[in-house]
Image (cartoon, rainbow, N blue to C red; front, side):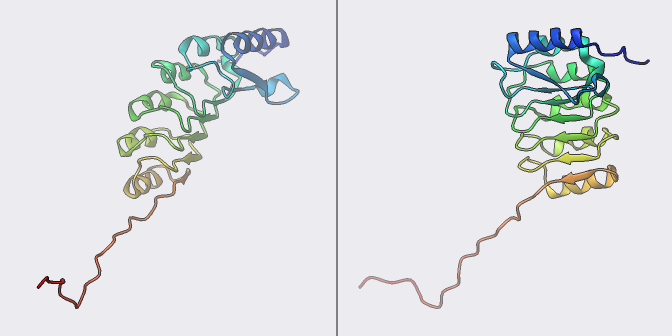
Length: 185
């Protein structure tokens, strides 16, 4: 079903409410209201709550990007994200997100970019992430995902650029010595 057009009065009302109550910024993507809005939480007052996201509900069909960088995300917030059917970009970098919180993201049919940089996400999330078929960019640097996990994602999401830097494991070997240990006389 088609979204109702966004009107400036609704945008201002929701934007002012979220800024005042939660410190969350709602910004127009362009001067054209039809281009939607993005949500930035860098100035948020504390944790991101479901109440804060529910405050966005009048704009739900117009939210294209949500940035939760370095935020404490409370229980239930990830499930609330499915209320944003036009969501294209989601930044969860350096947040407290865990493997089990990702399942609801499979319902976001238009999600193109997911940033999980610096999170505790590991190989347990591969099955879930593989189910987000719309992804074009998946950022996984500084996560717990292994080379094997990255390879699985690349094979199951062939149209997605998986950006991960896995530091090579360095093995330090003890140098062999020709000398016998010193003995005391």
